[in-house]
Length: 167
Image (cartoon, rainbow, N blue to C red; front, side):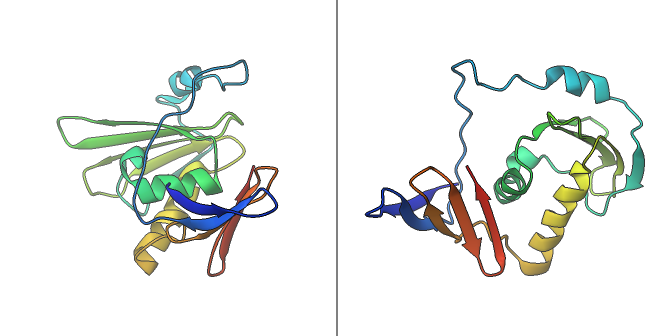
């Protein structure tokens, strides 16, 4: 996301999320940099999961859908993604989180996928809620949202009835 803001007298800032898309990678320095979840991806590569359903929307490479990725990163931070597409137009997306939640969705091109999920949260369900909102409203509230950054770094985004806060 791109945020345009003006500094406030208290050391915070106010502004808004711009409509333009942006991407960057996490800083890779310091002892507090989170470890990759590669081992978790390997463990769930073909796992059955605790819940198997049929998804509503085709498999999506979340990292290429900027608005969806931004919204998901705000509502369910910390998810790592992988995606593959085979020659037969079979698409597979994997999502993992450090809390042990994971999802794997497989489907051919625009067909509804088979979704396998495990762990404490249903990550694919979170993704589908966002995609449903995008389809129903024609956009997601993250873009154009009002932003307030408190002096301690807490950031609050709000647009209409939607809001989120993070540190």
